[in-house]
Image 1: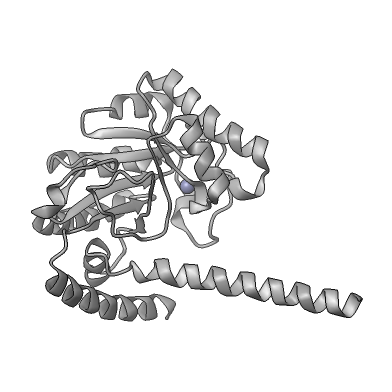
Image 2: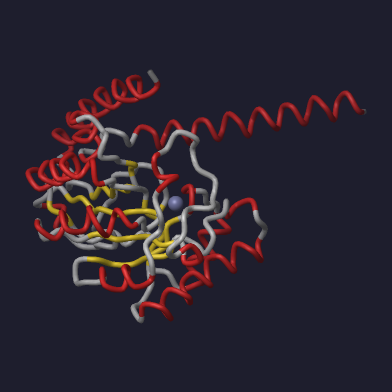
Length: 277
Ligand SMILES: [Zn+2]
């Protein structure tokens, strides 16, 4: 039901935004997708999604900065958690279409089943993180490796020192293992705040990626980039809307939710202080 409501809002949002773009004549934005697992039994669906992307957009790397948005709709493809099925199933499909992608790796979990918190009903629970040798053989001009922390914690809840270690050690470990620069970082669970964003900058990353949908102006090299969640099980309409920025309204909805909940806590605190006084 929640999914249907989101879809309905996205349709309305897309229509509104398309009209606004028609009037204002803006550049087409860059939309960054993020997948988790692409299990073998969804290979055909995943391939069809790539064909949809190919038909309406130019696929660029997740760190693309430039003016191609003046002439093309731009899409970038990323994968969080570096599951074996991504290297086995998704990368060959991407290679067939010469599409670039980025894989964000939890450096301390290579070759292991995820030990971190996950939704109860997700199939990802049974997917193993790819081994060091599998990921090494996946590196190519089309495949960029990025960091996804060491142990996939909630970075905003573990304290400054631990978060700094997760962010910096992931980069150092992956660079040492794979002998490639690790310049991109995806926040586990998308959780970030001003402090963890600053840590990523200070650690030497070029961009950090959230899980908040965003129409990115690719002309600008903004450090923080939003992404929209996609899955091979998305319906054709859902997927099409996602690559066309239809889910960007969720960005404003989550800001509103944050503001309302911080006001709620402030009111609660005030009420408590008043009753204590
Ligand atoms: Zn993750």
